[in-house]
Image (cartoon, rainbow over all chains, first blue to last red; front, side, top):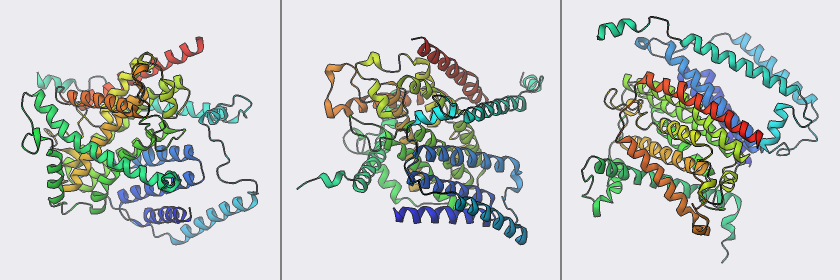
Length: 179
Length: 331
């Protein structure tokens, strides 16, 4: 258990450092996926396999691939060197890091964690679904969020169709040349 | 001497993990031979027939050749990504085998979210393709990787949607429960009530495994091998192994979800602990149809590929999902 914890911590922290220190955007993106994988490993250790699976699915699988797509489509192929400049803003970076760190530490400290221990959460996917949809006595707040996210996804799908739609007349010229 | 110690946690998992790796690597080796034999018989040839009786030892010779071959990497390649890509492709393909039930009580990890695990791990596969394509720093590789990633992301949508019908019917995300729910003869298997989903999963699975007619990322006649054009020796061997492993994986999942897993087709043929024979037979049959399709169907064009995925497969899935849910509400 300790070995696994040390390994996962090292993996998460070292790859997270690599993300910000690497001068190559693609390396950063791939290291970020390694960092996410480490976090998923923590979820497995805390006996929350569903959370781990969704972490892998969404962060490693989807977010990183989308980032890589963005990198590969935005750079011009002639100058594909994928370099970035390290930002030299030491002081703002330091202050924001300290600020976020203090905020998180404060939240961790004021919360009473005495009653929790790993692995006593909900294990059945069915009960997770019930809570999400707010049925069978679960608080309805998640149901509202669920609906809001559905609307957001619908908007995204419609936007994708609008963006990728062929304009009328596009492609006609080529057919005439072929004929 | 008691063998009970082998059944306790760290040891049990390590042993079964080693067995799974053994199975997957051997499966890949045998499938290379099967691929060449099937293609040969379809094209009225004999295929490999020099090494061993009827060429049966050809995989051993192939592996020996691959191990002794120099592992060349291009000078301007991104060395780390280039070398990590085959591993990033192979591990996901091998890891999902952990949740597949081979026989009653014979499953390495009976996760209650096995299907989500499968979906999550398959989504990493696209990452390996991108790594291979970018790491080679060659235009053909990059083109192949972009095609591969676009194709795998697009076909993941119908793949996941086609699973939902089975999940609705079985009421569980665990593959063991799904197999158990299909007991009692082949008329209880889910391919009958879920026939459209059965077909969609098959086609989307072909695309996920990057097999013909969806082999645009490889496309040897246009981009001469795509994302794997720069690989040689054992790195190339590992990419091939992961392709065959994912093909076997899709077949095994297809069998588990729609064809009753290890359940015998009629009940009096129940073999008890040897039910893995049924599982193997059905999986082999599905893998044979994959190879049959590969050697008889031409490759799709990129826009046809996208249109087919988004305009035909996804609507079929959604309509049949509504039908399934409606029928379940009424009954």
